[in-house]
Image (cartoon, rainbow, N blue to C red; front, side):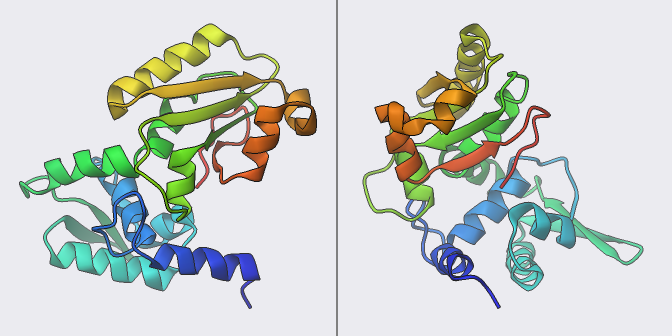
Length: 211
């Protein structure tokens, strides 16, 4: 049986996403993001489902719709079905740009901040709130919190500049120590961040990107 929070997450993912309400659901946006922002990668259905933490049957349905619409191509290797964007379709390039600007920040932040010596990286603020389904105006910028004791501000700002160039919107990095994060009540900003929606991007020093 799903935990209540799990049911809430599935429900929110089934609604039209605040970041891009022309899509049917947040799940559809996350599937498109994983596929379109990694156009040379071939995913198995199981890999994609595990990466996005969504049911296998839901992943199969989403991929079936996208392939039927000519956005994906697939091939069989043994018992596995491999899928990737069909870049010969002229719709794929502009759709990729739209997905980059809406659902892309988590992936881009993860890539650009992967080399920062951080313990944890999270996105907070309006983009995180819209992704979680909270109503409000479209996010104008991306707020990123970098937590770690070995972090240098130069490397954080360089990563933010690279991400900003790719996403076409300002990236606002905030750096705090692990101790400060654990004692957020002593820091009004961290206290607010922990009370509001946030999106985990990196949760260890290896650069592992979570979903």
